[in-house]
Length: 147
Image 1 (cartoon, rainbow, N blue to C red):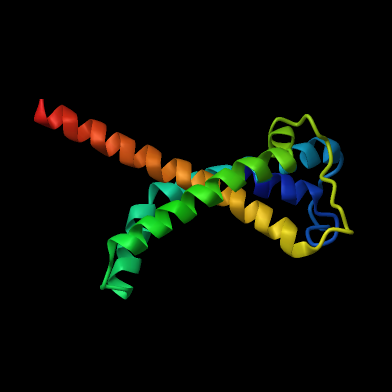
Image 2: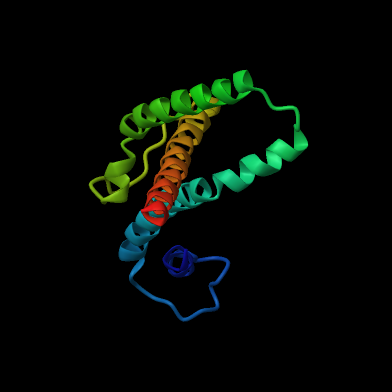
C-alpha cells in the first residue's frame, strides 16, 4: 500500500503539482500497476484470513442456521472460486502482477458489470484460498496439541 501511495504521488501532476518531483514517471507507472494488483490479491487473502469472523457476525444476524443453508453457501463459494480462476486467467491478472503486460487495457465495448463481476470473482477466489488456508492451519495446530 505504501508503494502504491508513493508511486501515486510521483505520478500526480495536478493534485500535488507543488512538490518538486521530476522524472521517474515511467518507473512509477509500472510500480503503481504492480502494487495495485498485488495489493488487490493480498487484501483479498487477508479478508479470507478473517472470513470466520465475518461468518460469525453473519450467524448472529441470522441465528436460525441450517445444514442446507451452510452447504448451499459452501457450494456457492466453490462456484465463485472456480469462476475466479477462470476470470484470473481471462483477465491475465498474473501478467499485470509480474509486469509481463506494461499497460492496463480496457475493452470499452464490454459492459461494466461483466468487468466488475470478474474482479469480484477473483477476489472471491483469494478470499476462499485465504479462508481455507487458515482452516488448514487451525486443524494442523489442533492435531499438534493432541499429540
